[in-house]
Image (cartoon, rainbow, N blue to C red; front, top):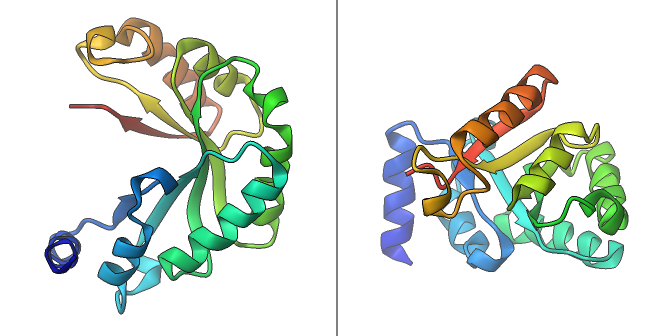
Length: 171
């Protein structure tokens, strides 16, 4: 724990202010301790929920804010969308995230996609403000959604629509 705090403080001192977490990573409480006393307005905290119901999503958002020791999350994503039908399948969760945004508990909402079909759906969804996309120069061999030639046009379309894009599995 002490080494984690030391590492995060070192990263912050070197200019790292973006911290990506997820409920299943088990890192919220560790990160809260590491960020204690740092200026909140200089941090960008992202987390992800695997909630499948409105009740789970409401509980997650409140717990995430408590575990991270912050009044708001910069981004909260629905994690690991694997089907093109995610906007229908997860509508209650989306509604909770939208409500949390309107209350100032979450600043931006979106998804992390695992597959070309859900990624293409995210491009078209007006609800998505931020997408965490798997993109890497070696493509499918590195468990990507598709080749860079398939993924990049989707990311460009999101960018053109004003959506935030974050790359994962880049290295």
